[in-house]
Amino acid sequence: MNELEGRTALVTGASSGLGVDFARELGDRGAALVLVARREGRLHDVALELRQRCKVRVDVLVVDLGQRGAAQSVFDDLQGRGIDVDILVNNAGFGAHGDFIDLPWDREEQMLNLDILALVHLTKIFSVPMVARGWGRILQVASVGAFQPCPTYASYGAAKAFVLNFSEAFHFELRGSGVSCTVISPGATATEFLDVSGQKPTLVHRLTMMTSASVGRIGVRSLLAQKVSVVPGLVNKLAAFSARFTPRLIATWGAWYSMRAS
Image (tube, rainbow, N blue to C red; front, side):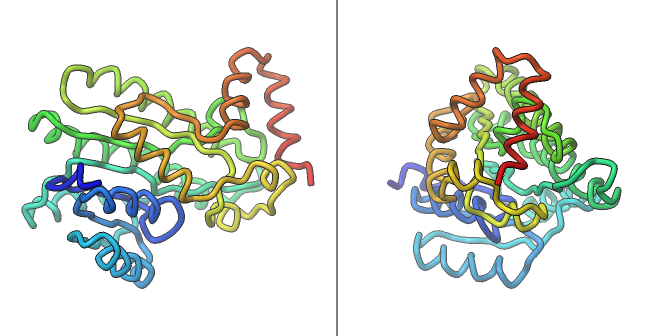
């Protein structure tokens, strides 16, 4: 389990949910950790737990990645400390639930800045030195909602479709470099996502909910295996696969209904 000893992993959104479980999985394998999130108290609590659990170095950066220039500030800070990042986990993000016309623009802008712009910027600035060193692993977090239009999550689903397509394309560009880009597309997961998005769990959520620990484990295993794309959970796999053969209008109706059925 010390396969990552001597490597350093940066995990964003590391104060709760999937971010914590990705960090646990990587730390258990011997990677030193850099945890990035905006909630300082919770981030330091997670860091303390991981130091005791994994016996690895854990650095903390309290940063709101949705702010302009935040990704560059993270990179510059780590360069100043002499820390090279070998593994990047772009987990930070959130969704906003509701009809597009009713959602406040500042909330959607914040979401898109974090879910798209921060992810792409972090990927760019950290992948360049990875390629120069000839080794690196990147894990991007998309969503099963990336596979079809998602009414009541219109811009969030579209953002995750961007992450899915961007990551698969970048993985292809990286071939032969020693660096890989894996994208994981979870379905309903027991995290704070629904609370933050403003949605109550639907019947579909309750029937298909996966634990954060299981998704974290699948994500890290897929990252280390250099897989291109993975959808955790049988039901989620079937939903993503069937979306390829379903007329778009029907897929859209299905996504809308699944977000309403109680």
